[in-house]
Length: 293
Image 1 (tube, rainbow, N blue to C red):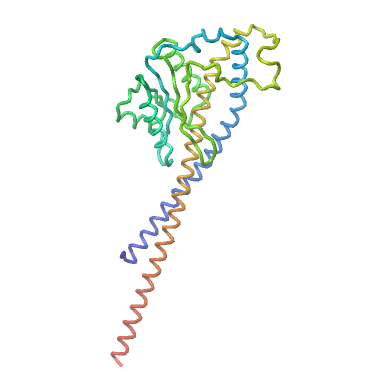
Image 2 (image 1 turned 90 degrees about the horizontal axis):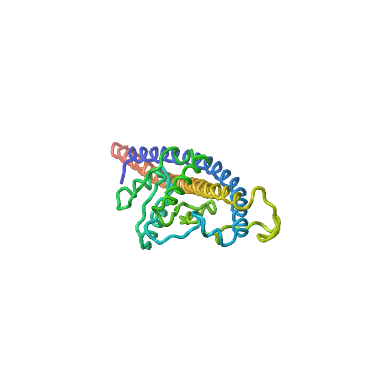
């Protein structure tokens, strides 16, 4: 059994670790609130633009399928954007993401090239036989804004339009609640017209109704589709960040609770050992006094 001095050092060490994990928990909580607010604020815009694009697609009818961003091609090669965290200490966040990545890749019947956002994914994929086409580092994921997300969306769109890939996918972690965040694959391109969110019924006429648009519906549609794609990338990055900090907060809270429990157990052992030492010393003193007398 450890001695009193060693136990005292271990109690102090666990206390220092608990202070660090508690501080990290507080930082994660603060950033979680910030990114969650941003994700929540972007949802109404995302829903509206998705609804409007869906409504215009319904108005244009079968002509939408002939547009480059909606056209399906013969399967050849896929492009995927993988979004992970830059730092660790966030529980099973990255592990779950990589598990989903491996499962998806095994099911694909065609080669895949990858763009990577996040140091953890780059480190994981770089050590394995993933064909990494690009590693996005500027800006850091935590500093992402709509302008940078739009640049990323335009880059993916340009690769698709050049005809190098038959489809483009995005793997991110969807934030559902404080305790649930799910690695999710979404098809970025070609756009599935049937999957577009329809416009709310209280927003005006039905898709086939008599609506006047200035300029015409085709022009408005062509202008809105790039904004729609940019919004999808921006929301995916925001939800990944929110999920990362939710997972880190949960992991640091568990670490703090575990450190508190460990401290309590060590203090109990320390107190028992100290009491035993005091008792032995008293017995030695009494025995010595009786021997002298």
